[in-house]
Image (cartoon, rainbow, N blue to C red; front, side):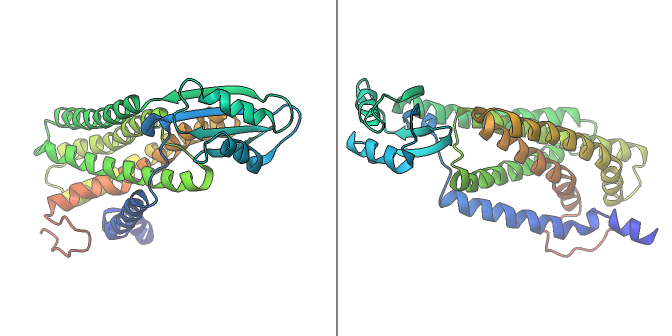
Length: 309
């Protein structure tokens, strides 16, 4: 019984969880600064073209040489399998695509099939960046307002709102760090659908956090004289099975879509999968810990404080 009690004393292990999160957040911040996110044309402007070669595969080097001859040495080429290549260049304008297709056609003697093409101007890209920032900020504000209203019967309900936002910032920052590394490894791009994924992560993370916070509120009402630390720990242990069960079910569906779905949804699904994993962790091990640390006036995980009598 003793070892089981120590194992489920999540609040007592707060330094382990919080220090681990601080390390992950610091590493994410470092990779976000350098090398930074692999921004798609939705944010940087430019053009993308997907070619499919019918008779032979010229290889990435061959496609790169064709783009160089078409005066686009800055082009980024990604092989997609089945003789398909994704090409990203500066804004091609009205006639730039014709010059590229002419050079690409020389690679195997017949014109390559253009499967998809897209162009985003600089003004549209700037609007996308601005709208993305506004969308995230509006979501955060509404989350805080909702939590403060939902927990209005609890003393200092703003603490629950701020704790949830801290956990939310933790989740988003780590997901951005993961996506930065994936941009290097598999050329994952941040585009408009990525923002949809981030907003979905925000919603999922807050929902998971509120489940635990709601249990804390119920236990505080049932036993107001109990030490807050013990109440929070009890609430986590009572909610952890439900949180993990929901998360595992969600991850199973996302993994199935990631393995068998189309390539166009890959980056969006990666964002969702990362968000579910990190969001589940933060709801259990971060958000509630912030409440306890705030209650005990210890906002730094390495600071030692005396337990209230």
